[in-house]
Image (cartoon, rainbow, N blue to C red; front, side, top):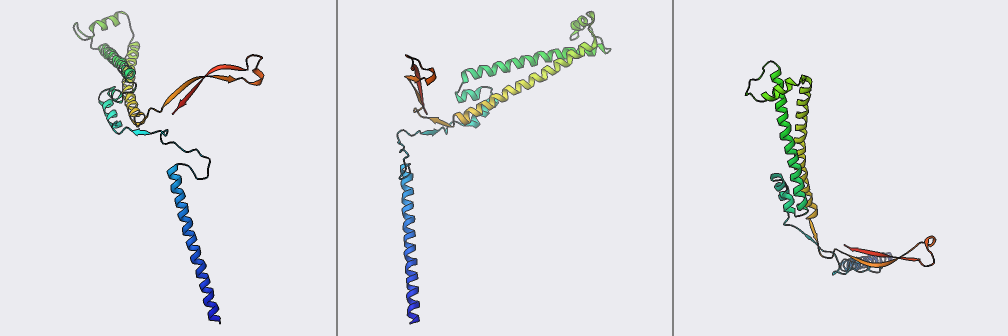
Length: 230
């Protein structure tokens, strides 16, 4: 009697366990099928989300032929070459680069000339007066005849040296900035090219005025409506 009841109880337990296992597997299969359907349609079943039209979906085309490394190396070798390689704003960037480099180059040359002149004259005044035909002989005579003190000469020499060094840093700065600009254009602007779906539309429209600003004949005012699609 007890054996029969024990056998019946075990049989009932395993039957319910097997039934629960079958139902769980079926639920998982249904859930997997729903996930596949959601991925295929792009919307969730039973939701109000609009379905995405594949024809209107934006497509991005990676520009794998444009290399930021090439843009950087070109700008490193020849200023402006990276901008020419990127083809973005090169028509104004290249003149700006060479104007900046040219101005700093002129300042470097001029200040180096004045620094060398003042330094040579200062050495002449220390007990080695120049002879006719020596470098900066005429400038030495002019400073002596005009009574220019040694302190002013030393200040002029140091100012020329400082301006020369600052011009060198400015020259290197312009060169470095154009390298960074070439890298940014190549890395972020040429990383993706957008298709021709990028557009805007201009259409006439009416603007509804607030209640406190409306009159008898001017509840609406004309305007332009600009719509960007991107």
